[in-house]
Each structure stands twice: as structure tokens, then as C-alpha cells.
Length: 540
Ligand code: TXA
Ligand code: MG
Image (cartoon, protein in one colour):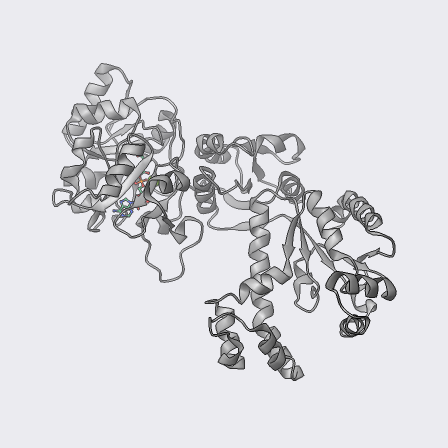
């Protein structure tokens, strides 16, 4: 079959419409990506989409309309929230899922009882739909698994000889596929992020739920709410690895992993610092630009002969969530956290908080181990349930929260019980801190400080690239504990005696901050040390 190249003139649109009426396939421009269109009410035409794309039959298609009145015949009914959503964002990059009417062929629904409908804003898409006089089923016009095409050239690369025509309407403005929201579910569920952000949806719908599959790999045996989520997607030939962290940690990571076929998919800001071949997909703080450029960049990577691609992770907020969702799928969920982790520990009263505050001001993310310890024993947490099982329900208050005193009484009654407590809580604390480190990297931090009095005891030293101990003479610490916590000298001494000796904290390779002066002296020491940390980076 010869694939015709059509222009968005009245003749071109007319010819596209005729081909569609005949049951043929035509790739059409939309504001999100190019769509591979067929008459949605013609089962044979729809079936040929799956052949042309080599798409699994159980992955349903979106039905495109160009008039609000054309929605009602496709669904059993339009609830109020659906109508308000459509009024707010149609025409535009939003797909709404509702129970399907009988006229919608099984091929379109992929065997489900629901149908996805979208009213695109691209004038050429609208003109083709109106001229054809039927709704159009249109998945993205790529071969299944490849990045979606955002211009006619990319469509032709994938579809030459497989479809009747490509209608060239220029570059797609948004660049990632539409937001898909399922209104058959309460609360409404976001299945695929796109140009309409979660905040924009919540403005109309109130609270929504973001499907787990948006940012995480499906758990073994779980059923995908959106069948498309279970397939590897948007992937070029090269292996993609998603690198989380700020510009500096990203550049450091990539430059130290240079090698044959290694390419950086980075932000504009990093181009000049990278020593490996690099391709930018936009500015770090511009998710709209990233969305617009991502898919074409993924295709360019293959043209560059990339074998391993280190992709700078976008911040997963607003439209950035859509960019993140596509990239993490292209990477098959292979994520590297490049953030530098500095452990901060030392005995009580030595001045850790002052140091953490100084480093927060210098731009570090502070991960507080005490907060993590409280978070893992929140009501309803798996960790609290395990503690209840191990130490009896007496460790819970009538409200179901943790009674810390009671837990301490039981857990510290014997070394075995203490070990049991730690074996339950420490792995959960490590998991939580690891998740917080990942979030800090997503926010673009280059460095994080793990503020952990029990850094070694909890095994959190293994998360750190470098460790700093803050220590002070006993009389200094005694005075600080008494002043800070309002304790008598005896109580303060008791607390100090319960702690490990200085030698426990001041290990080989650890940087030691001696805090025997006043607070401003410590702040200055901390700031100076922070300036110095580049030295720690290069020693790995
Ligand atoms: O922006 C877009 O939506 C583009 C342009 C061409 O309009 N189209 C597009 O279609 O991205 P496609 O087929 O590549 O993606 C449709 C997604 C798939 O993940 C599919 O599983 C999901 O929507 N989907 C379609 N109908 C569904 C349904 N009834 N229930 C759940 N998910 C559905
Ligand atoms: Mg697609």
C-alpha cells in the first residue's frame, strides 16, 4: 500500500475524510500527538488499527469527537461531573472514561464495558472528524511500544506502507498524550497524566485518586485499570536509565559513567558541563517545553546510536507528572538516585540541629530520622501492626496510636526485646528515609543530610556517601542538654551516660566537627565544611 502525504488544505482534509468513510486508516494531527484514525463505529476499520500498530487487542482506543452533541450517543449517560469537566477543558488534551453505549464496538473498548472519549482542540483534527461525519477511534500513530509521534515525519517512519494516508498538520503543541480520567470510579481516578494536570482536574472534580500505575510498576498479578499501563511504552532501542537529583549530582553521575554508546538525555542547563554526548529535552524548570520535546528526543537517541541513556528526571508536578510518567515507562522503571547523602550523627547535646539548620540554608534537603521513626509507626501502618503482634495490644492507646512509653518499657526490658523492636522498626525506617531521599532528588536537590542520632544502630550509614559527626566536651554537652530540655544536672548526666562513647561516633573516615565554642562558631564551621564537600564527591 502506498501511504499518501496529505496537506491540511480543504482538499487534503476532504480526501482524509473520504478515506476514513471508506474504512481506511489515516494518521491525523492533534494537539497532543498524531493519532492513527479509523471510523470508530466500523469494527473492521478499527480492527485494522491493531494490525497496523501491532497493538495488543486488549488495549482499548480513544474515540474522538468534534462536537459536544456527539458524546451522548457513545455512552450510557453523562453524569454531572463529566459534563462540568468537559465544559472546563474540552476541546483539549483530556480523555474521559464513562460506561459505553451499545453502538461502541468491542474492538474499540478492548473488551471492557467502558469507553474513552476525547474532543481534541487541533483545528485540523476537528475538521477531519466533522467532514468524515463519524467519531474517530485513534491511538497514537506509532508502532506499539515506540515513542508517540509529534510530527508527520515521525508517523511516516513508523507507518509507511501500512496506512492509507498521513495528514501533515505540523508539530503537536503539547507533545504527550491526553490526560485520561476514569469517571466510572469514585473518587475519579487519573489513569494517565497529560496536559490537563491533577490540580486542574481537582478544581472541577474535588478530590481525585492518582492510579498507582502512573508512577509505579504494576505489582505482580495486579490488573491494570488502564490496559495500556501494563505494556512497556515510549521506549527507543537504547536502554534508558532515569537519574534523579539536581543538576550537579546528575552531571557528576553521568560524567563518571562515561563509556561506549553512553548518551545523556539532559536539560539545557547541563549541556555545557557534560563530557558524554548529550541531547537536551528542555529547561529544568519548564515542564511544558519538556513535554513538547520529549518524544522526538527519544527517537533522536536511536539516530545517535545511543546504547545506554542516562535521562535527567523531571520534577513530577503539574505537567511534569506526565513527562515523568512517560520517561519512567521508557526506562522500564530503572531509576538511579544520584543525590549525595551526608550522614549527620553524634551524641545528644553536641549540636547536630545547628549543623543541620546551617546546611538546610545552604540548599541541602534534611531527612530527619526521628520523623521517619514516627512516620513508620503511624496508626494503620504495617510496622505498628507488627509491633502490636510482637509486644501485645497494650502498646496502643485507646485511639489506636502508639503508646511510646509502654513500648519502651516492654522493648527495653531485655536485650532480646530490644533486638526484636529494632528488627521491626529499623528496616521500615530505612525504607521511609530511602523514599524521602528519592523525593528530595525529584525536587532537584543535589545533596541531602540524614540527621540520625542512631545512624549506625539503624544501619542508615549504608545510605550515606560521607558521614559527619558533631561532638563536644562532656561539660559543654551537659550544659546544653540542661538548658535545652530543662533537665536537672542528674537527669542530664543520666541521659548522657546511656549513650555510646565518643569513640563509637568518631570512626575512621568520618569528618568530625568539634563544638566547644558558641553557636555562631559552629554555624561558621558547618558552612565552611559545606563549601568543602566537593572534595567528598570526587573521592568515590
Ligand atoms: O492524546 C491522546 O490521547 C492520543 C491522541 C491521538 O488523541 N491518543 C492516545 O491513544 O494516546 P492511545 O491508544 O495511544 O492511548 C489510549 C490510552 C491507553 O493507555 C488505553 O489503555 C487507555 O487510554 N484507555 C482507552 N480506553 C480505556 C478504557 N475504556 N478504560 C481504561 N483505559 C482506557
Ligand atoms: Mg499510545
